[in-house]
Length: 580
Image 1 (cartoon, rainbow, N blue to C red):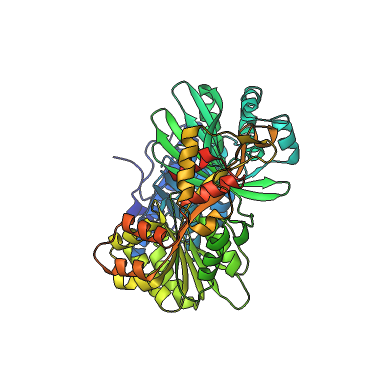
Image 2: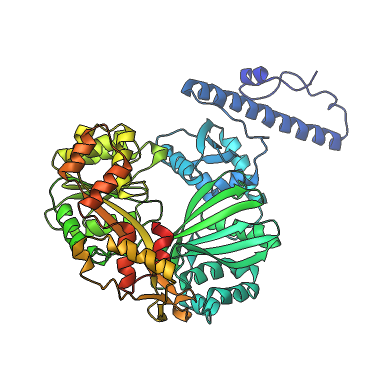
């Protein structure tokens, strides 16, 4: 049994002097007595701290929150780095447990101001934050641990590329093949700058970095097509990916589940965002970096590539005061660009426009733009209910995915609002069966729908290296058959027996690809009386709608593409690649 007093003994003695003598100290030599006194003082301090922890634990029980004693708790370096030392000291908080899903944070004084601090921590790390009550002694012990952390050079979330960087890294890059050599001659610390700088040089929209069995594949998506750019040594993988994760505020130690982040790229002429996505694969993580030109003004309605009567009819439909205009197509077909162009046309004084997007890709002055957030239960349906209370004239919903959103959008279109939105189908004719399969009532859909736009993106021929192309007899006969089925008014613009088509030979201006930029090809139909009757009947099919739309004069996507090929804008190969 210990010779030192119990906690209850200390509490009964205001002076803190124990009722028992410390054994063996009398009659001993001076150095022995001094040592015994030090041990006694240490024990007294320990007992006092334990007593304080009991009081803190009792207070935690009264407050209804858990208690933590960090006097001997093993706190990891990752947990310490979650909260900077100056913030921990100023706020009286400390992270003592950190995983990809959960953070546990000790607080000395629970107060309302800490709610925002803890919320921001959860948002930053995409984790659940659980507060614990701790004693001031526990905080002091954790603050001392910061001194043991290895010094890590801070990395800014802003990724800076100067004009000098662009000149240094991509000077002399005329085509994708020349990039391979550039990657071989750069140090590991500069690889990420080279990857991004060269992507900007060749106008890539996405950067794919994929771990393979023997190396790392770097690929760029240019005008919708993926191109292999370089293969890097596998031993560079970990440092390369860690650098990307740090910039995008992702968790470096998490490699077994997807993560999403964002990097702000600072250029001499402004800034743009890069959306970063990681995905675990069999050989390592796949990283995709999408370059978002958020400062871009987009395209105007006149620049969409609409032709003749199609242009006039769609313009008439978007100027109507109510109803729905739906754009359809697969992912990456330019639907959002078309919607932004329509909004740009409609954005006039005296008109209130509200959008609901995921994400907001282009910021537009004069328009109220709202971004959905699934993590906070802010969905398209809930957002649409709210924006209708904001007295809008025109609403744009990024995508109709479910029955609830569809029904609210239709009701809005029937009650005096112009509703713009997108939906995923393979053709314009597939929109009506898609709505009905969701459970939309036919008698509501028929009067609400004004027009449906189906579209794809085709690559433009490079203007610098454009040359005439000779088609083989089989392909030429196929092209003539499709053009022959056009409405008579559209045939007046060309001679079916004297057709000329073009392609790009490949040059430095287009990185040797023969294409530079993209344009949409469209098919647009309007709700006629016959189509409304089909919707109200029980015999709705994509084929029936397509047949009736063509009968009423609709130019199909492949026909619109061939007309653009005749106008020297794109190639026959591109049209058939995306439209048939």
